[in-house]
Length: 186
Image 1 (cartoon, one colour):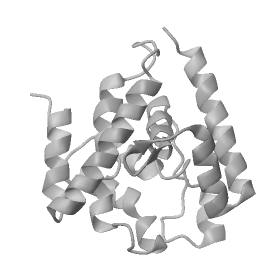
Image 2 (cartoon, rainbow, N blue to C red):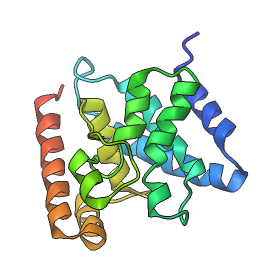
Image 3 (cartoon, rainbow, N blue to C red):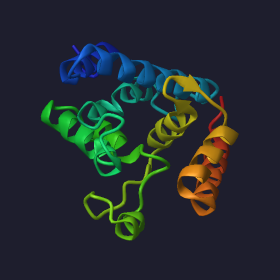
């Protein structure tokens, strides 16, 4: 049996949840991200991306949130990606699932960002690189808690939180996704 299924992903989420309240909140969010990702790739040629991987990995991208819940502070929350990757590594999930956890935050975190903002992360790039990683990061940005929003909402949210410079990066990321999607249609 292939253990890398939606069922196994959901089982793993339940294993790492500290309580029902946090499990339910994370589950609602990751299911909304999964839904957004599947909507985004619905017209993509099946030979151009791994839809099964996107379906499963989108459920696991925030598994590290159980140890970094909202309100635990910026320094802790920013680590949920590497914590999630560590959980998946410990549980024997392949590297490409681990990388989704590491690389989904915002539109990715550059080594330069870690240095400039003194982020408590290993000194390397955490940028989504593969088509699948980019789609999950993009879908995650579109989801506010468990509600799917539009690109304008996302850009404004990042503008308010991080300023105009970062909002421009978000707009470029959205443009990049649109171009990639148009090249990979059925």
